[in-house]
Image (tube, rainbow, N blue to C red; front, side):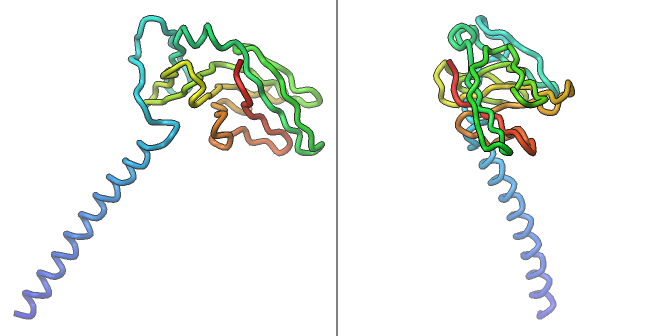
Length: 173
């Protein structure tokens, strides 16, 4: 009788530990879905009035036409940590600038005022600055050292890492 009780106890412990692992996976998926950058509805992939731009790693960037018409430039803040200075640069979306006193060149790509991502599709779900993001490329001495998104409200998310310079999205015009 004592052996039967021990065997049933062992089976119960194994069964309960398996259930808790499934619940942990469900909870982590729920937390990912609540991320402020990733949540929200997304426009269909082939909506009239949008331009689809192929991007890295099989992702797709959809810039709605009304976004392209409204937003022309961005303001980037470049901080020189060695000199303890920072300067703002107004840059036309789709153009590039050389950072004075450095070997850096910043290329502005797409701007999305209300950035949302669903799988590999990135777009703007409105024309308001609810979650502004700018895709940039940074070259140092002609070699690409960074390609990614700068987020106005989340400046430390996927930020450009450099020992001397910091580049942040300050505004969109």
